[in-house]
Length: 404
Image (cartoon, rainbow, N blue to C red; front, top):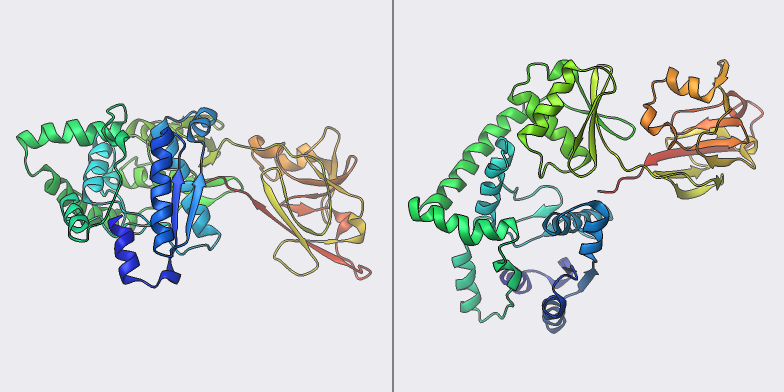
């Protein structure tokens, strides 16, 4: 409420709006908190959007704890808001005590240097302008400006790890080290400087069709640079939260293992050795329901397909030759004749171009019965290639959807 009050008194009301995520976990008390924010915004002529979430069901489906699931779902919502250009950033009221708790939790999880840095002030999605403001200063601001607020009773329930850190562990540590909070913040500052140096030397990952990859030669030394390269790769496809040293060691062990060996990571993330690379991807493929090929934009399985008569950077094909075709998954007996190439089974073609086996049954195939016209997003067949006699061109852009 302190942050919202400051925004109302210092910013143009048209420059921001409020979102509140209702987790539907705390019954009447949760509804009270939601309605308190909604009414406060109404009184101050601020737009307020409420996201009604069923967090318990979300956690049950995905195998998360309530604490994990609530955090992940909030992050997904924030990312969707920024990705959809509804806002440049989502501003949260994370404050100094939250930062101290986060650093301590990362230490207990066996974090590397990046975890010791704590939360970023601006991570590209969330801006946290109050990270250097103490809870004491916030309470003083609330009292000085006579600002009402409500207390979340679950903040004192010790079954949640953050609450136990805040209400028990930190208080015990402070009995021995009264300046533990300031010391952790200083550690964060030092770690940030070290992290900047490491980042300037870390090899970059490469994007793959369903994730990212790292060249094995870049991480063979198994040093801090290699560990950071792995953390960056995991973060590109999932989240580094709950990624521990044991996970990093398991990934590094793939260097000595044969092709196809894999490591299961938190949040349905997989690391797999493929030839001279380690590939990171989310094991969440969707089956393709047969769909009529047509102009327009639509989603098929994991893919967003845009078919246009204007150049969109996608594959080019003779639109008239594609009339009556279907977008489907690969079927037994399908044959494919490459553009200016020979004819072979679709399976052999996918092997030739080294498409990972894990995604072969989830690729969108444009076909009529067993006759393949295009393997998206890779290549068109010879028979639908653009010729001098072509009257209409279909530009077919294929992008893999992400459930972040």
